[in-house]
Image (cartoon, rainbow, N blue to C red; front, side, top):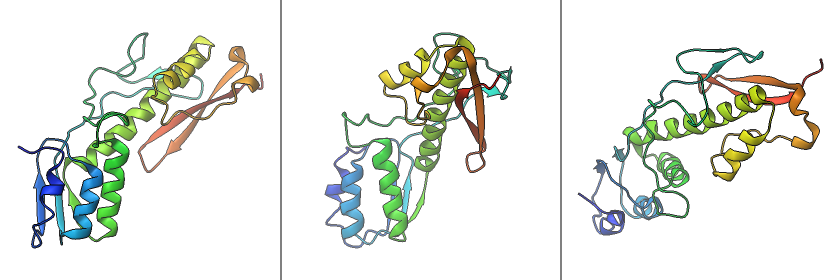
Length: 194
């Protein structure tokens, strides 16, 4: 059991070399202070869990395959387990804060392990899936409403920047870009030549 202020309470432990934490939230900015004041060399953070579920499989022609076809209403398939990070306005354990904390730890030579690494990967995949589904629905429905909706809901982290004024919703073409580092793809839109 611990609170988000745990890192500030550990600052006086000058011989702390290994820190392992289970489920919970910490202040990622306070962890930065801890790294600079305590000689930690191994960090295991099992703070939150996540799992990638079914993903939209689509080709450039808009043909959908795979186990899940996005209908209306759901942002993504229901079998995803979304890691519990705070929103930017609500707490110190945000996705970007966790990403920065791990980057800083690795730069300082601290060995990092635990479910936090996978949780960040799941969140990146989650935002990509939301983006791909929004782009697919724009193509399918010949409207930009789905694209605008993810912006309104502040879920646009991986949505491609589109110049909507230069696109004709009735003449859209899907553009599929492979992302080898992520083992998946990103969708975008352009006006078809036909």
